[in-house]
Amino acid sequence: MRLIITLFLLSLVCNGCRNEPTTPGTDTTSQTREAQTSELRHKLRAVTTADGISKSEAELIAECYFHQNVGCGAFTGIQDGGDFWIVDAKVGFAGTPVKDFHIDKRTGRITSPIGPSYATPLQIFP
Image (spheres, rainbow, N blue to C red):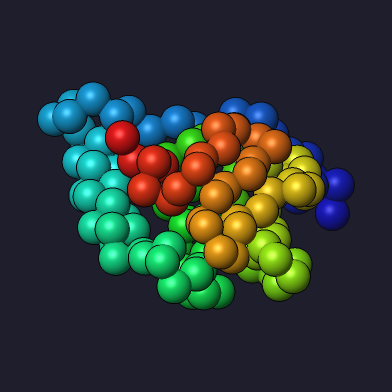
């Protein structure tokens, strides 16, 4: 059992949280990332703040945020926080839970303790 745990930890240390290359045309990884970015940008444009932010829209916003801004971490879900959606997420090698990451239900404003905050979701992708 110790061997398995040791190998797992060694794998984490060696592989870590890799940042994918983002220079266009460098390899298939960057092309895949570009395609994902393009698809997410297209989906995000359909989010309308005029009618408020639904749970499914908040999930898309969080997915876009993590894709664009978080190299080592994961968005894991959305919870209702009254006037805002609470983004459940983990960051870093150890998967430290993120606290106080919110998406305003009325305006779509993103308040993040782990990266940039945005007045509107459309600001995620420049």
